[in-house]
Length: 264
Image (tube, rainbow, N blue to C red; front, side, top):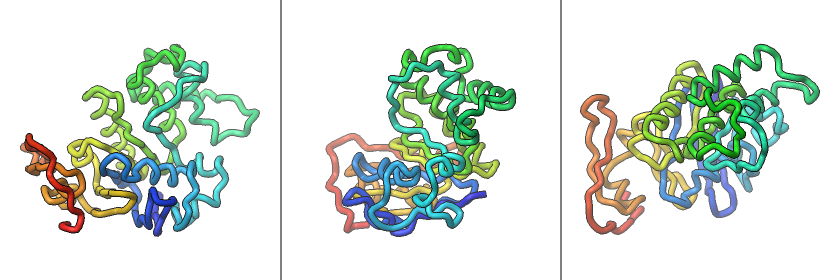
């Protein structure tokens, strides 16, 4: 059971003194306009970027003092976009998720292979297992990378726009899978553009604007017409979903509204 805590985390001008907590088993969503710092924050958490100040703590350990392999044993990430230049099959790409748990000369065990097959099935790409990864569509690649993250057996799952390129069914499948992993103790932090998906699948939201956190809390408290106008420049109503009760954003047609963060 692992807690992620960011303390005054900054990365140049792109991320400014962000405080954030993701508790064990919790799914935390990052939302905000393009360029607000969501991807930069996730890359700092994964160790891809080194913060210019502040700390990212993982159960009290500073993530940036860990070796890459030690981080990879505990954190798995799914990027927003992936290059497709390596000539591996889908099964081989997914099996790479076991690498942090092995010495470099070790081969896959029967247990490793079983994990890979289960992950391929869970994300719906088992029938693509022998296809070359570069031949997949964007959505198929995204699901393969989610499967790779699953076999990594992480305590923290980092997802950057995991619904990119996915149709509605697979969007719901991937986010539902993250929730189920949370119920088993995995901590999830993800960036999403779709506010209704974020409201339905996240326990808490952090709203970023120009590298700063401007709001934080449960979706029902954060997603308000005032915030949507101030941060996104849109007019909207927020109503309870008729079945689940989660906040649902209904955008009003018309020209953008003036953004004014000082009004929040």
